[in-house]
Length: 202
Image (cartoon, rainbow, N blue to C red; front, top):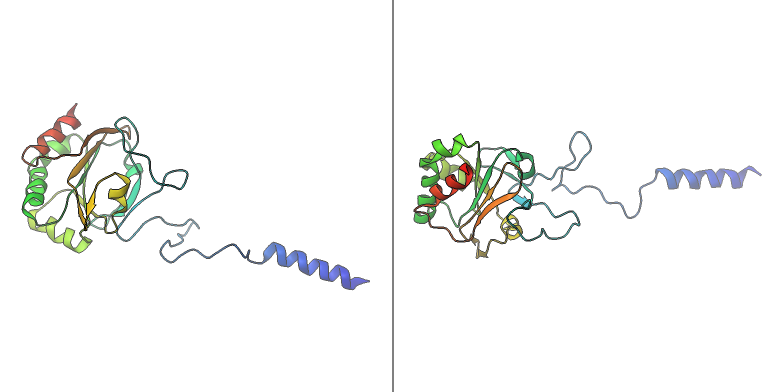
């Protein structure tokens, strides 16, 4: 008489405690943190999908930009949405140590005293790896952060063209309210730092 009851009990225990066939272990590329959540922190750069899990919507002035989390050249993890409350400038550029990109970076460096007074966070983004970013920042004493978008996912989320690993030169100014304030799809590096400062000061 007891055999069916024991078999039923065993079945219930197996169903309640055993692993689900459809459940997989967290990937080693998404480590589980001490509180049990899965970290989104990538080794290079990664755009975070929109709420529906699909591609982020088109970047529009007056609306929040695509979120992302990435490692900066100085070892700090940056998550864009966590910077709300401060103005943010994202500038995409083709390559470290090239003449025009160096001129742009140095113009931001030279304007840094005034830019920093606005409380802005300035982030340069290219497909260069973090080692190249560290050397570039050290060479020209750049006082802002550089992020590696090695797989181009951040650029793609912002609609920035990627031609053979060289990102187009474009800039996004984000207000302290977390919404896009201005978009530069065409950049003239000779006066761009002045333009960005005007955006941040308005």
